[in-house]
Structures are given as structure tokens and as C-alpha cells.
Length: 327
Image 1 (spheres, rainbow, N blue to C red):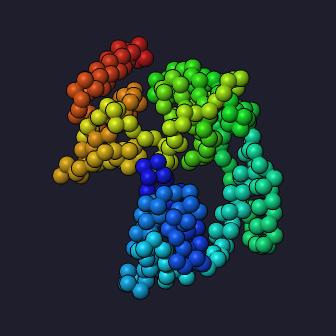
Image 2 (cartoon, one colour):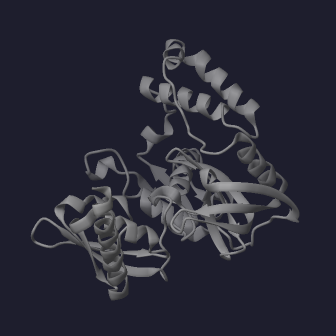
Image 3 (cartoon, rainbow, N blue to C red):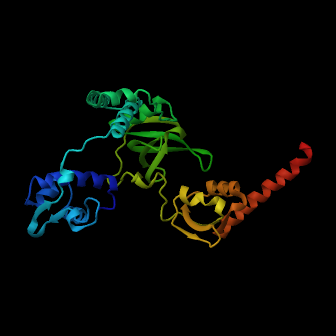
């Protein structure tokens, strides 16, 4: 799999590739590569992956048979994947609810396609569709419909946008020009992803933190090497050049290692953990340390540890100074 390709994209190609190859036994591997828009090397890598996939049991007869010596591709023992998939009740219900939620999204482009797909699915599922009316799904845009609609308009028209964006970690608004790449919903939040001219890199902007968005009469085509992030591992993706921080977490703060992306996590032998993580902004990390109190300690770097200690000391002194007046 190429460095820029997500696991979701590859899985989609593999599920399409299997029935295509089963119906074209002996097809030239170069033709398969052209059909799926990838290199010959990528097709070979996909076939090697299929070779170790199959139905539960882990026996040789349970695995897909793949052969491509001589430049011709032969596939076998994959009839299960070749058969049309049927939706279960839960799957159909989830799909109907999801389509209804999508149809309500402000600024969506091809709403007619969504309505047609929903109508066909409701007609085919009957009572399942009726049950879906009792389920309410709320996707909190956190932003005015107009802002989301303007972002979609800029994306469709390849126009640059100017943002006034609130950086939560520093509690300050920044001004930046962005070439839109996509509008995406992840974990209930809407994001604008694009090439940020201020950062000179791809960035994600949460709509509920966009204080103002203006579509500019400027070409907004991102650089050719700009690639959307793979969101399979989450929205936050640390950069290799970000500050490396080492923390000691007591058992009561162990959730931090699960909630934030870490580079390593080692048990301390007493129920706690020593974790390392990267961050480009330490403001949120200082606040997290103060909130955790004695449950977490910054081990490295020393400068950050001093900042956390100084902030905690200043808070205690301010509290002590105000205590007599309050009394």
C-alpha cells in the first residue's frame, strides 16, 4: 500500500478486485493495473495480501488462492466474496438513518442522488424503513449552515477562502488563507480540510471554531503534492518535528494514554504508565497537567515541567491570597 493510500481505500479496491478477477481468469496483470488505476507492483502487493485472506478457520482450504506468475492472474476459493452481499436488518436500518441525516446536511451538493438512494432503500426494506422513523440522529454542525454552504461552494468552484479561525490551544483567533480540499464529518464534527498558506501544509479546521469564512475571487487549487489526511487513526496527527514530551501517569490518569495519540507507553510497575507523545503546542498539555493534579507529572523536557510547576504554584498563591477576602 502506498504511503498516501488509506486502509479504507485499499479495502474498497480489494473488494472490487476479487469479483472482477474471478470473472476474468488469466487476465494480464498490466490490464488489471490499468482497470484499477494503480501500478503493477500495487496489484502484486494486493494479490499477496489476498493470498493470506479467507474465511475463519486458518486452514489452507479457507484461504483465497492467488497466482500471477507469468504475468497472468488466476484467483480461486473466493466465491463467498463474489456473491452479492445482503444487508441485515441492523445494517439496513443504520444505512437509512445515515442517509436521512446526510440529506439534512446544509450545503450538500448532489442532494437528489441521496434522495433517490434513500427512496430505493426504503422501498426495498419495508418495515425496516418504518422503524427508522423512531430514531433521531443529531449531527451537531457547530457552525451556521451558511458557513458550511459557503465552504462547499468554494470547494466546488475551486476558490480560495479566508478564515478567521480560533486556535483553542492558544485561545486566540488567527487569520489565514486556505485552498479547500474537502468537507468531512468525523466523530460528529464538521471539518474543512485544505492547504493552509500560513502553515504551508494541509490542515483540518473545525467549523465550530471558524469565526468567519469569506470566499475569495482567487484560484483555490491546492498544490499537486497536497494529500488529504488518513482519518482512520483520528483527526490529530502529530508531526515528527513536534516537541517530544515524556509523562508519568498514575493509575487515575491512565485514560490519557488511550485518549491522546502516544508514541510509546510503558508500565511503571505500580499500576501507572510512562508515556511519550508529540505536540506542536504545549498550552493544552499544561492545562491537562493542572487538571490532573498529582495524578500526572511531566518528566521531559525540563522546561515544560518547570512551566507546569510554576503555573500550579501561581494558582495556589492566588487562591491563598483570595481566601481571607472570601472569608
